Length: 255
Image (cartoon, rainbow, N blue to C red; front, side, top):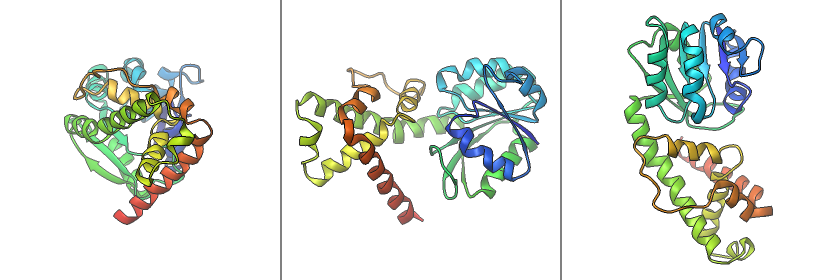
């Protein structure tokens, strides 16, 4: 197949492009200023996979959907993107939604991808799923509503809880050096906060909260990922590396 990765130069494109190329598929990377452009790439491709920030996902779908033979997305919310893909594409265009539960990876072996099929998911969508499974991913099938509700409960509320804790720590007047002299559980939480607000994913988590229909409006202002990163200073990168190790240990114990 010819696979068009919209926004394919980002984390998800860098992770999945090698998988599809190794399986023998031709890859087109398209964006606002590429050649071919968004619409031309969609016409050329057998399937278009959209991987752009949530805030512009529907805008991009409107542009490419009318030209697609099959259409999927890698967005962290599912209700609105799937509705848009079904609405703006032709009746014979395949549509399916994906949400990889990981960031940039050299391998997706053992990682989980949520798949939200629709009444118009067909052979092209199935082929993408097959390639991801061959690469070692675990596919979890959910409805868009089930997905958004679960992500709101398990990920968004965790993000807000860590930001609330970070906001309180920053308001305490203590320096990051003083806080890292705290007992071990506090140090672990600090490391998890540092990973949560990373430059790669911090703003993405903000969008996942903002655009999830099951989320509650924030009652009070919490510090932004950028402000929290600044508070960590030189402690940020070491904390993020330790948090990655905690998570790897957790994944290994689950397997």
